[in-house]
Image (tube, rainbow, N blue to C red; front, side, top):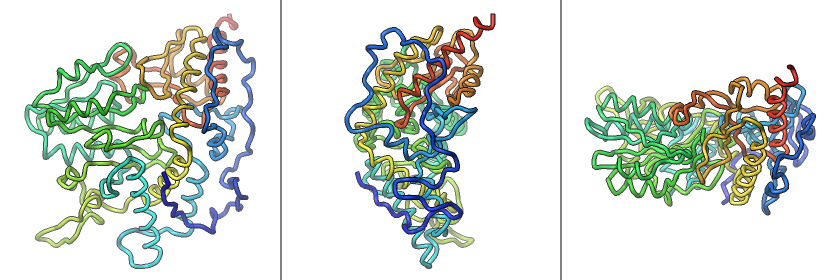
Length: 464
């Protein structure tokens, strides 16, 4: 897929030296080769059976060379970024696009008649077209820019939900959902006297499809489900779940925040009514995301917020609104964020997406087998379809302690409830540690994670 590149050419980031072709001038740290962990562990049992990590068509080094932050050190160690579920790191192409926009093209959009306003508007709308193509939408007009997945879901709840939910209606929400796909529905259900009904999980962390089918009824107005779980990695059969919901006349909202960076998405193939994602989990800046909605649904949605940019005309007797998607984009949007998102999509789609997905799957298998050699470590969730998320507990150690220990070795993971308390409660947990992988992670980084965790397990015995 080719996405138009409208980043202004011929200038660099002000105040920084020009970069030679194929290099980046936006990092202030000295690039360094990844180092092997001190005192590496002996080969884990079955190491000879670990999968080969060089599928044709993609190499993680081709991505790593573009990510400046991956070449810094943390606590004297090369950074190992395994917190991609929280946010992804940004390629130099995105960083430079932001500097280029602010350095030579900064202007408000849609309202100005001057050259820079037209240039900024062109970039903004090119970003909308890029998102539409990335998701397989029919038209850029099906895409609404928002701050991220959370705002997208709240927009749907407050705009579509107010007009379509009422007393006795059901909103089915999978138990593995992020809080951002639970709380907005609770708020609108309280207001409309609808009810939020959880869809239970099976023992392996998959959505219980039998229970889901039993919960669907004529009362069901909406099904909310993640395309990939941020805490269990589970990838539900969203297409099949959507088809079943549509038999009952229900709409389906898919939270794609964790999915879009890991495998191709086609909203028309899924037949999703709504699809939301956040740019910062897709190598783009924070504060920008997108909501897709079917055009007939989007046309019927009333404004959630009022202000500039979303109107046609205003006087004190009557206001008329702009057509969608602008009707749902009140005020000045995150223009630079859209420019960064466009650059991120240009960068990400330059790789063979199927090859990236194959590489991540192989790396996930490698990581699962390598972590199995750590005494007392238990991975949470084992659904057959998963993205590269490894949430785990370590016997004798609080998750926060695990994260702190790894940080001393330059390894960044997440610890806590991951904004998915019902999913953890399914396993009797209040918190856990999580390592989440991306296309630029390597088997050597997995080895460093395993080595550090094994040293943590051995530390109490050594101290005694």
